[in-house]
Image (cartoon, rainbow, N blue to C red; front, side, top):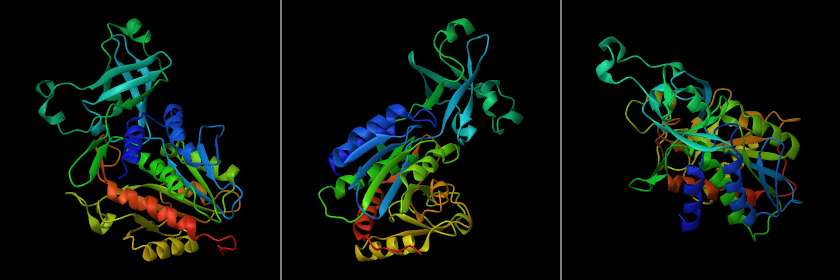
Length: 351
């Protein structure tokens, strides 16, 4: 991967961005994307938008969601311990003994998610999955009054994890879902800059996907794309314990993952498959019997309907602090999207 692109990926992956707390990370994304865009803007709820060739046709919207799962403060007890609830879907098992950061206008407060030690846990309770209300955050406060000087109910909380390289071009981070998507759409602008294309290319770093695709819904409505592609992670099944008969055969390092199903527009899908074949980009396939569980579901029903496809990146250990992806796959996603944008002509018909 290009050095500057890798630095950008590491920077945005390390940025905290729980759903509803996206602003600072969006500014980092925008700083990078605006180098390659003709127009940039934010909408009312914080979607970051960068546009190349704004007068072009058709209008192609490429969407990755920048938000990640996180936590939010709900209660501070008399001893000064902080209780929380989830923002998005997190397995409580993965929260035990994690380091966290609580964010507010006063600054960032470091803490740890505590749990009663195994020595103090009865044998019959050791195999039970804890509920989030049974966990707590220790910020080192003396008591409730002391804690309330530092944190408040409603403060957002992020897991304190960093981007690291593993062997064989694999990378780990606690927010690959879906910083890889916003990386890819920004890279497409970079790769297209200076090219002669018919299409207007709109790159969007959307907000609040993890709680229902809110950002993509509002972006699709006001940007009025003619065609759209959502970029997100998908479950890798190349590790122990996966039932491929249920979840499919998806490997890190085997290329971008293209989704098939009723939510995916056949003309857009055919165009992606054709571009991949022409450019010798190996693809993996998944199938969704209904909703995809991604921003594609919000986009395709906007206004009178937007022809939409979904491209995924194989991700091991999704919604944990150690999500693992293959950077070669990610680069191929950017290449595939770039070539698809180049292939679009003014007179294209989607029905």
